[in-house]
Image (cartoon, rainbow, N blue to C red; front, top):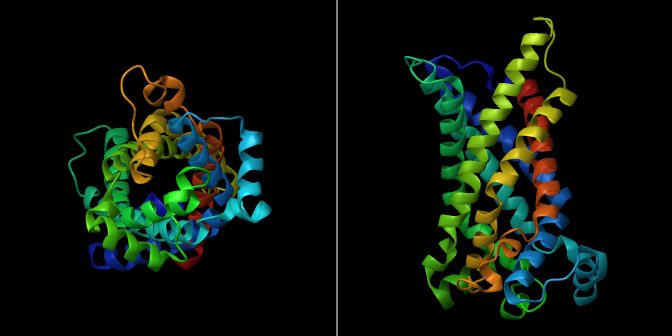
Amino acid sequence: FKGMAAAPPSHSRIADAARSAAAGSVAGASVSAVLQPFDTLRTRLQADATTGTARPVGATLRAIAAEGHGVSSLWRGSTATVLRVGGGAGLHFFSLQLLRGAAAGGSGQWPQWVGDAAMGGTARAVAVFAMCPLTTVKTRMEASGAAASRFSYASVPEALASISRREGVRALWRGVLPALGANAPFSAVHYACYSRLQAEIARRRPASSPSSPATNFAAGGVASALATLATQPFDVLRTRAMLDLPGGGAGTQGMQLRALLAGIGPRLVKRSLQTALLWTMYEEVYRRWR
């Protein structure tokens, strides 16, 4: 696949990584804005499961709309989401491109899938840590119901300032460990699967035929679905930490398997769609900008 297929010469690695970052930012911001309702729904489902007020997806959607401004309430926190995903995707692809360039001169002592997983996980970890303050703000701005009564922010800058002032700067990184637990393994699994699928597809098609958007989307969707299922419990723990909700003790609903699977439906749909669309758009934008 064009965007990540070959490492550029050392003198152009930074410039190539910058183009990769720009393409990733455009793709991330665009896709995240469209799919924001899934994040809002997932956050509410996970928060309700922790507080013992879980309800079906349909009822939760109606509750979100009734408590806010109708259907537009599903885009609650979209500004923070666009900034976080756009910036995070840029950092992710920038780091990934540099790591691929550095690995190109290696001895090849590890299997390819191990190297791909390590690069994907490392690149994502850098982005997650850097963007954690925006993730915290995004999660709180998405909150509705009981959790929302504690947080009321007029804008992203106001939220960052308010959290820092009232709870301390460290509160902006509350939940960073489960966030890393949910996202670094996600990207490790996703990138290893995506690379393997793309390599297999490339082996079966004519050498002169480039990968198509449909092929990129299919490979991204399958890889994303597998990675989403593997990291679901960490995502629930991240939501609890960033909303400052109790985790629950042994034997309570908060720690039951059902609670750890809260929001899996919208997260699976949203994450698979977002990642598949993001990588498809990234591949096309990057190819045109090279």
